[in-house]
Image 1: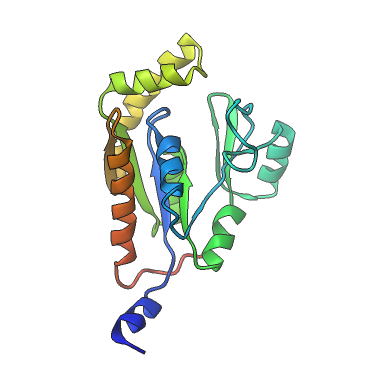
Image 2: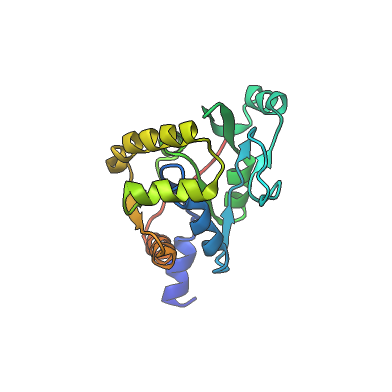
Amino acid sequence: MEIAEQIQHANKQPLVVILTGPSGVGKDAALNELKKMDRPWHYVVTATTRPIRHNEIDGVDYIFMEESEFKLSLDQNEFLESANVYERWYGVPKSQVSEPLKNGLDVILKVDIQGAATIKSLIPQAISIFMIPGTLNDLENRLRTRMTESEEQLKLRLEVAKTELTKLNNFEYYIINEEDNLESTVRQIDTIITAEKQRLNRPHIDIT
């Protein structure tokens, strides 16, 4: 076996990558572009009790669940983390992380900032990337373009975002998702993951 192959074989532990940031910062848009790059990554599908939006597909964008169904899964300890956000439940099914890791796939999670902190505490080896807007005006424009919140809800999300941005230093990497420059954001995420794959002696991650 060649030296390069020996190193790769000894260092084949998959990554868990957490992508987070304020609501409306562009996490979904970044993920959609990353998926086009055809990397050997598993993208975790989060479960939620919020209503499905017109452009979403159940099981692809989210796993849409009734609240009773969600709470049953919660009672059975089937979520890695869960939270009630803006009066809707969100949760990361353990199986969405554990099964791909067993198959040697890197796992990409998109979660809110509270969820990211919880997952990082449960999986300290996870790589965390915090997306921030170029300006708060950029964030407001994205939220308004999305047209999924009332004016009152939009103002609340902007206030929450201001608080969330103060937690930036709790994460390992940050990326500024500037308006009309999504390509740069995606390239930076890909570069971070590529660099982390070259890190030696990566620890084994086990989800139970």
